[in-house]
Length: 243
Image (tube, rainbow, N blue to C red; front, side, top):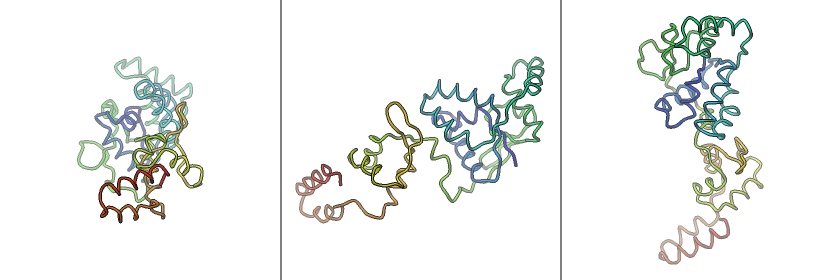
């Protein structure tokens, strides 16, 4: 099954403040776990990248180009397709040219379902992908979660080294040491002017999967019975050492 992906869906996936974000994230996760082929076109890529960069910033734009768009097949708009969309646009100026291209692509490719939050798709007779439950003419997707981490991890909750340290309750130098010493430490999803960034769920899973517990953790638990002063002193020393 082919599913067309619209700009409105890409924005909703990336923007946590978007009113459709939760639904979009669930639909995207389900589509990635299914056998569906995600299809878009290069006008959508141009439009989405411009909107995401302006509204959400350069980090979100990098996630879009490096993490989201590679999961789908991009069709290139040729002259014939562009002319057909222009002709349709002249007859219905209320619909954007990009949308007219999308409708033409869907008809030519025999795609009847769109991952979109734009009502014009349903007006044109296409179904909208929905995340379970009844949703009018929507195309219902499975509510079953994939048994493996989906690409959703890569499109939200970005963290820097400093933020990883804060969430993991470790000094920054410990995080940097992990990066140097452990070849399986997750690779950053992007490198910004301020430094590399990761997705927290991926890093958190790596931390939780480490076989060796924090050095001295059992020792601290044993000392808790000795009183708060002894525990505080020990934890201060451990933090200074990067334990």
